Length: 134
Image 1: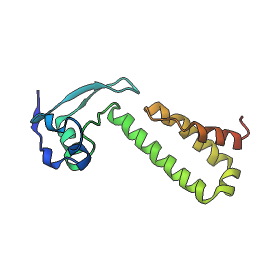
Image 2: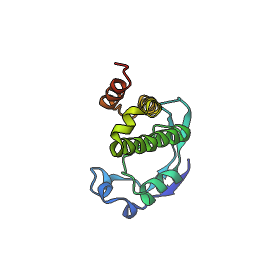
Image 3: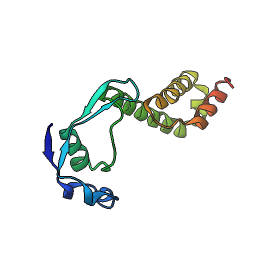
């Protein structure tokens, strides 16, 4: 089993304040898991853990549950949804008249929960109403 030394001092402040921080071991070890979206077997490698927790300062108890492909897709959907929300907020009247925009937004909103993220059911209902679907 691969092990990489852990540097607790490089953790984020929120991780350092976390319950259990003082009980961290001395090494990262590969963690095997199954993607919750596509069921692919995956490994959260010791190297990836070190990068996530010490370089990117991710919270220490954050775990992987999506494979790299599904995670990349989830990040892309999230980014696109943020852009669409911003566009809508800045162009409400025009956005509500743009059926193509609304259909794309609705499709992404419905796809996002398949990535194990919380559904924005209020926004879905709003867009369905704007499209005359409800």
